[in-house]
Length: 397
Image 1 (cartoon, rainbow, N blue to C red):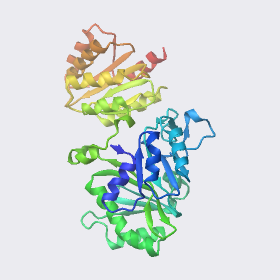
Image 2 (image 1 turned 60 degrees about the vertical axis):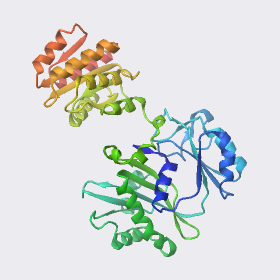
Image 3 (image 1 turned 120 degrees about the vertical axis):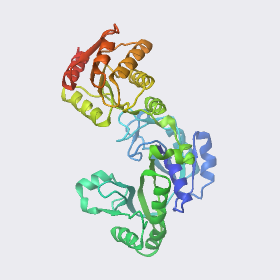
Image 4 (image 1 turned 120 degrees about the horizontal axis):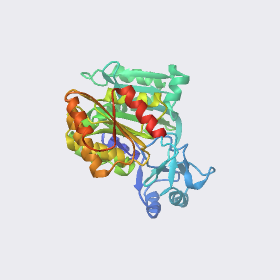
């Protein structure tokens, strides 16, 4: 689960991290009052969407010359003008794709006198099985670009879970940044606080880009991106309440209600598979034969007829889907249950696109018999290669 920048900063503020004063708004009519609550005279008007690259983004409706999704304002009047121009419009960034995201929230924040911009993130480093700081002096930039062009400018500091952030860990981070004076002292409290927030709230990612050194020498969290481990949200009702479903794909929201692993993609062939590895292989072979998958969908090892029916409905709700491939290897999952679920779903929602089904494993013959006797226009496949060929050929006409 992702949350907005203003929410992430409020979480970090609770752990003692230095953040600027700011006010979230959802209407341009709130902009003047929000700005007057801040010290000024410099303000920052920030689009709140679940995507990076906002500052370099563009608003679809405003033309190529329009300013991006993060803007400086030097008066209350400028804040109001920017709010009216940004709210309700579609922001396109490198991460949203051309479809963009509608801006429904803004964060009006007090400006900062920036001396240096740094990069910091916390994530689970699976190579060592520990939470690690990833730090770089190249703040405000795409960290992937930094890793590609100048990997020596990225330093990773893995944290021993039994010890937490030690003085030696802080010293490594401070040295990597080249901090001194007030900034170095701030790091002694900030870095352990960020680690505490990450671990206590079961985050999967905490990114501060940029972390800034201000002209007065102190550190400040200028931007914050936060993601939470969905499997641990049952422990954090306070974090669950921060979820903004308007920022999520409606099909993914529906899938989460049935505990389905679903991710919407941009292709034309809907996939329903059991097992993440098999799902990835299915998507790969669809691409091999010249088409693109419309989704990743893993129904899991013990899906019920109702769960399979729900999965099928979610796939068919995608207007981009021109064909459906069901690929099931029955171990714990029984092929007859899959067959019954597919038939129930087809009878309920109809079948307007080609459907290819490949079954193998437990009760496979019974599953095939159920499909063959259904009277529905379902194409059977012998194996994954055969299934991929058949669905691609059907989609291509």
